[in-house]
Image (cartoon, rainbow, N blue to C red):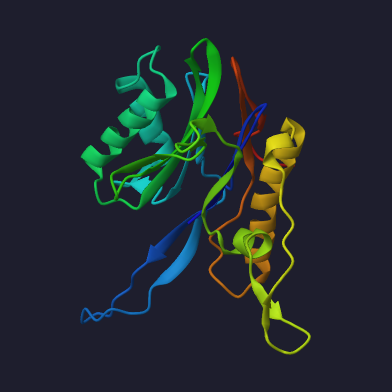
Length: 247
């Protein structure tokens, strides 16, 4: 599993992911009887966040090892075989859907696809969530009722930690009866880029640290990759690098 987050604010888009890849090992007895499955950490150096053509960000969660091949390989094949230099971000999302639906239609793989598209002379942010097994693409940063871009945050994977922190929940009140806990909004519309970066890292780091201490499968971990996209520019804020032997 994974934890990924995409924050979209007026100045730009920030995407972040963890780096852990887990595997479920199914064991059988010599007579073929199925034993309890074991989930193990396969790697803490898996790339789930990608920058295509220097202007489109993609982050993956769910099934990220498809056909025995790492997601990084599939994304690079998509870029080399299917994408054209002038494909806008919405077209990239469509081609990604087709690429994976053709090869792995039942895969529980989900992607955030982000970038900027010129509309009426203005660079407009686009944030899509693409569900392969559902054959569904949804633009999450646009309000069809008002026809306007909206700002906020989307996350995926092991979301229980961040949901507990940020979504409404109940506590026991003074009378011993359930009552909603106080909720304080996050002002996405006025958030600057540094705060968006800090929030993305906070969301991933808090999830990693919470999973670490809980008695549960360690499905989120490793380094945190962070990508920043603004009109006309995209760059890595932080990204794990290949290295030799550590001293």
